[in-house]
Amino acid sequence: MSGHNKWSSIKHKKAKEDSKRGAIFTKVIKEITIAAKMGGGDIESNPRLRLAIDKAKEANMPKQNIEKAIKKGTGELPGTVYEDVVYEGYGPAGVAMIIETTTDNRQRTTASVRHLLSKYGGSLGENGCVSWMFDRVGYLSFDKDSTNEEELFDVALELEAKDVKENEDENIFEVLTEAKDFLRIKDELEKKGFKPLEAEITQIPQTTVALDESKAQSMLKLMDALEDDDDVSNVYANFDIPEEIMNKFE
Image (cartoon, rainbow, N blue to C red; front, side, top):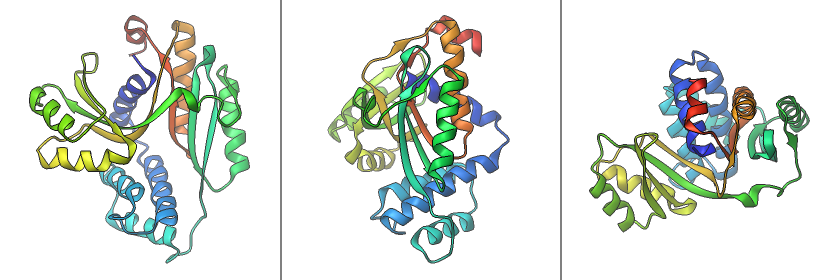
């Protein structure tokens, strides 16, 4: 399975078992704050802010926390100044990685990312060294058992989605869009009654690196460690783990 779908599945299982709600809130608050800082506090004209607020609601974040984060971003309230920093590098077996962070201390975050990559057999690279291996797209998934396949395919393609496909391993249908069309297509599908399990702007690898059991274990530990870092907002990697190996870790 691809790094995107496999890691997404693992993250969903983790989220159900994860009691560290405060850590989730910290990341979402950072995203809301920087989105409001960069694009203003109006969700109608700021797609990034709207997606961040959607994530906050999924995490059951109180409304007042959301409003406070927006005001800190727009300058109506004092607060920490964050910036987006994107790192590129390699994991075990040369897996290409893009690590998106939101930080108030670039030096601290760089040191942390470099340390984690090195600890699990990877290395930090130069900007642009792997980003060309990924396509930035909108991604939506839908439960296969509760979704009318033919209707979803017809509606999504009519809305000019890039691709619609069945993922038998995860028992879902997947809809890919151009990043610029993501919110429009998401809104229209929801109006038609299709509720996505997952909806995000993401990086899909063009090719994947197959990992043996040892490298797979190191790769999953690295992804886990990066996700647990408060400054890291998203991690993308082009690894592939055969199902028989993945089953040993579940």
